[in-house]
Image 1 (cartoon, rainbow, N blue to C red):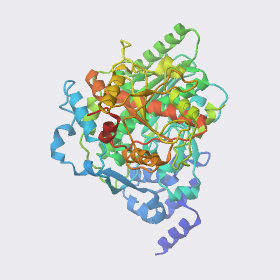
Image 2: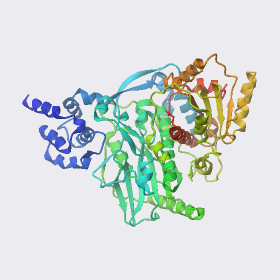
Image 3: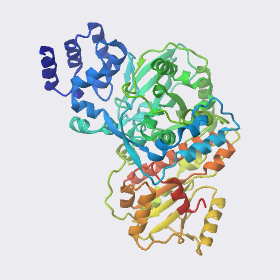
Image 4: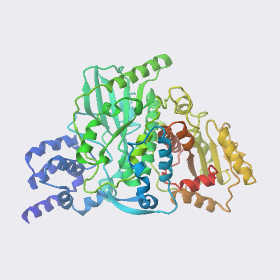
Length: 618
């Protein structure tokens, strides 16, 4: 009883979320934890700041690994109290269709072991149909939210310069992947951790499944580091005595912790993870424009032992030891960075050297430093979802070797971008709308026209048609309210589908002439009729899973992706389509802020119902 009173008095001094290293050590001492654990506490801080979202995250990680029964998670939760326990718990919504679907029907899709290159396309088609939302709604399930950042305890840490005026990796990371705002400590106690900070790159549900790694030439030594967005700092994972990376060039590596999204969204979380990869790629390419760097994106699937290049084999071993596949993390994309040079021959030689350096790293087995944190709480057994292993394996076939390459208001827009939670329900100008749409078109945006229009393979041939947009417009001045289509790139085949659909409804598509944007292929679809603006707004909201925000905004942009055609060409296109959609979404986000308006991404929509209204399916 005396010990319990001491602990409670200690907890009353200050919220555990704001503890200093000395307070954490005192808390351990009161719990009779051996002094051999105390030095580790210093690894959890930089300049007195905890290297996680809360000191308790770090403490729980350490206890889980090393306390060996002296202090278990239930005791930690009890001692901290209800306030912090609710801070760690959120309500996750799983689709009723997914949770009640007959699991036995999908046993063949649960394991990817039997999947071949010939059967991959059919598995992807089944997965795509299985993960579509329907109008039946969902049921809330209480679950423990995973940590939204990876840490490696015990590494040497290098703090980067925020707002650096010197073009280089500090500036690129600051304007692409860093934290742009924090809520106050009081607000952080009221909300789940996923919304306690805002990053430059958007993420579905604020769960940020994408982790970032940097490979560089550090004074003649190859250095591989993990980026910590909360502190704009790098933690060194390994070094090699030699390097073939040109000085001033860099390699960024993106990995994904898939189950950060699957935890909340079920198998559809795989699709959101792919979109997040596209968001991150788009953020880096925009930052490269600001910093005078050129970039080339390389699919990690074509790099042998890509996980090993990023030191992820240690996480695989940890996942196996814990018998929990949710902890796994895999390489997704590499971005080669070199200073822009008017001499394209020199620039291309640098890209060639960087890719050769990257491939040479796949043969190395460097000694890793640091110990990875634990992302998931062991108190909750993971939900076993069908398709997760199968979709990962199916989208690994027929991979090609190259994706996009890129060629004081933009800086502000990048740092100030947020996902809007409430709209004013006011009209925007036609020019504001057209500027946002033009940011995704090759005719208006050099970033798209030079490098990012297509995902190309080694042959330079596009393997699937362009992504087009369908728009519910209900609040744009000088524009008739209704359904519109923006056709991007090669649109002849898609335009014919729309025209046939209109003729079937005794109407004709009407091309819009917008001043200053004459080359924009924007069409009004009179075949979709509604008696009032209110009906159109309700239709947009209904097909966006009844989200009120879709009713209050001026435009809802739906991306129409050629999934079946893409998969038929090569299975890997299923990932590429999501990445491209994420990239286009990032361009829309940033341009909206530059135009003085807001935007938000909605991953939840009714797939079949929307496609039927747009006339893209029978």
